[in-house]
Image (cartoon, rainbow, N blue to C red; front, side, top):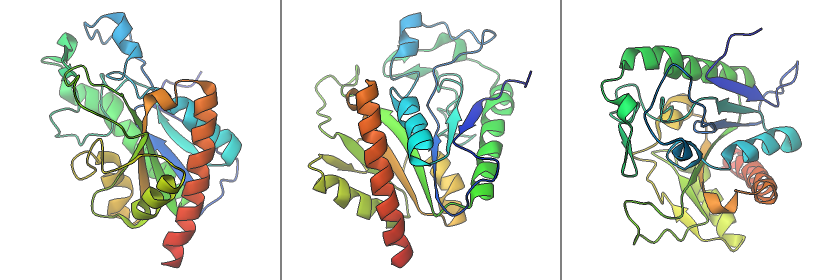
Length: 246
């Protein structure tokens, strides 16, 4: 039996096709190892503070139906947040959307990084280096309403995030808007503040990328996941061509 890893990869063939599109999903799982007691009510593991709801299903469909291999997290963001740098205060969060995570207070940070964060990112680096993609998709979802900000309006069906490299994002925002969607330009989060994985695996390597934040009520069902998988695959394919021709 293979040793458990904090990631899994889907859609890879024996002879991976280089120069295509790949997907990275840092918050695809709500799994918490038995030896890491978080001290939170079990129902919170099904909420947005523990997992990007719907993302695993979208990424699976992109990999299996649209030939976009995916690197997926296999542990909850409450155990270790893979979209944060090692020295980020939230890499092992002690609170999330107003909920205290008692088990993370005084947690062994070095253990969490060594067991989860580093293996995840080392494998992601190898995954991207082996496939040499022309575009990387970073896939996330967000809640329609934060508990700590109940009056905050979050009208976007999808947001496109970016830091310094907006080559792909600008095209994607336009194409999504043409679908009749309300699209957040670096909303509901700014990629200039929350872009850890893509800063590391895309911007630092000069690889164009698209970070999608899908409002999770859009992808809670299998039908929604299939719809968004097809839409993202189509838009990412078109964007990758536009970026190459620019």
